[in-house]
Length: 225
Image (cartoon, rainbow, N blue to C red; front, side, top):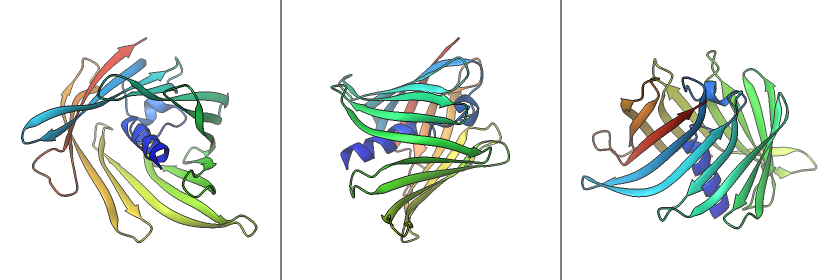
């Protein structure tokens, strides 16, 4: 369960999943080589360092590797992306000892849809995440499903995440609905500072319970080719 949670956290920090043409999907400007994101928890006006994630891109603008560090600076996990074809790649999750823990097969169905297949670590059942994109090519939703009957190919929906963007193509909100139809989580983003290429460097994150006080702060640093 910890590994599954870690993966979700990794993909979220990378801005709603890693897909084909990732720099464009994430709304980044320029030929980005890497993004280092430090996450802080905000409580009683105090900013507490929580974790750091570094996302590396190849020269074609696709994610090649994701590194996540804990608050002590220790490498906690790594995701390696292996491009098989233009429309298919794998994501492999390694723990801090370099041992493979989880592998995902991602296929781009068309310009508006892609599917990530893997084995759920909690129930040990086939699982998939189906991503859809809006007319601007931005990630719109992620539907998480588990196959409860492999002989009859019966799938049940576990959750759906929906992304919204501001006019500058920055992620504005992320809402997760569980299998009961209830809002499980919601995060809204406020962009405070940008670099010379207009990529956000300081982001406040507001939760479901509060729209006036941020729960998290993310500081990003970019390296360009």
